Image 1 (spheres, rainbow, N blue to C red):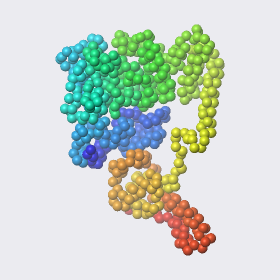
Image 2 (image 1 turned 90 degrees about the horizontal axis):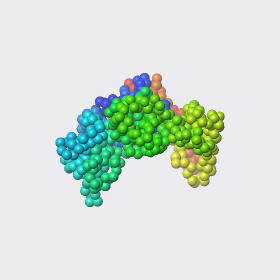
Image 3 (image 1 turned 120 degrees about the horizontal axis):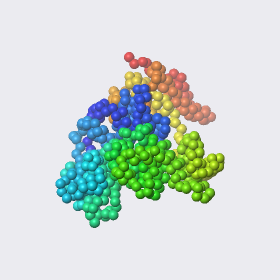
Image 4 (image 1 turned 135 degrees about the horizontal axis):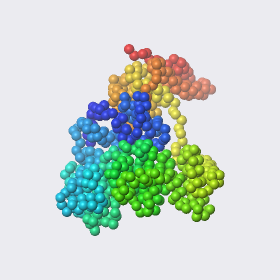
Length: 620
């Protein structure tokens, strides 16, 4: 694939404000000249993620990740370098230049082509929805009279239809220049044994699924009366696209691309079960509604929500399945630090029916009697404590104890237990005593496991994590010198002509990069800090350098600090060599070895070097 020119990449970075890109993923607040927010890479309650608009860099102090706007898109959207550049260029309408001309459809990255392909497919299904033929008239009648949605809502969500025979989707996609590989990987077709394609969706209402950036990545297909009887999924009410390189069910939520902009303290996320539930709520003005993708809610989805807002109200179906889904969700939400509450629906009423019949006011009424964590769990596990046996109440309390213990706040745990004592009709003192016994039992199990792991044979690994390795000699000095030449580039040439290559331990990342940069300075090949990331092939090298560049060191005399770094590096180089020579001298003195004089001379030179290392002078 033709490489994107360096000048084109630099132009893109200079025209894009990194805050605009990061703020679509992380809620940022001003912090002096920078911005801060919760890490998109780790679960945390105290912000450790910072963005510097002046430098165009981000730094996550909890995960150690750092970089520029391109590496941020690579990390958060799981893209390669070229894909990330192309994605940003399309998003901000910035032209790119390629070393050997622009890429064709076959030369584009597969992920980027799949995004484009899904946009084409959505347009194809949408056009079929609007056609003045039998299928178009049927689906519009189904949408407006049977499902009772407006045509404006269909336009807003780009609702479409797949014809009973599948239409000519494959032919249309090929005419738009999409490759056979993309058609096989997109999930819109069954791939036959001979390599042929047959449409996956036929005679179904098509609902586009978007990722948090608003890109169409998949479809949910609703069964209708025109779904053909020979469709292998005919009996399934809903069929989702299979997982593809751009669609993983457990990693996104329907309508999050819109809802995340509106979630706030007094307007938490509203979680419903299905896409049509979400569309109904949105059309009624409930602008924080989201839905999972037909599977149980995952930790990844909750962590994604936590990036934008910590509050969730659950409006799941009122049947047993909905209640069970809520109970499975509870421990995950507490573990992720989310503030979760439940809006109780009765019987077989679902959110779609409720909001259709009563409007958004129905949700307002439900909110007036919403249930917190303990109240909901107690209502599900112990619906009538007055008729429950002592054993039934004890078992229900143990299950609720396991939920309560997931909250890291002891204050919150204490309040939960007080609330549970009222709901379960158990004395507070008895319940608090049982909860302490529960925690002590858990702690004993934890300690027993720790002791078991510690008692394992030495050749049996006690942990999945590798043992910590001591920092190699010279790394601290190399890191300091590296930071200095990055922030004070004028120090690069004098340092390059003063520091001997042999003194740098290139087995460490810091030493290897310092050696590379000083060689560039020495031969007038230094590209400049603005283009340093394109100068590095290893993504981990780029992350490491971005981390060093993010903060500006508070140094009054950079030359003095450089000379101190030279002194430490020389000392780290000399000490082990002197010790080794001293051992050789001791051995040779016993045998009157002829090399003794040479060794004594080398040891003396190393001692003098250590005591009198070279220094640089301030640049002119």
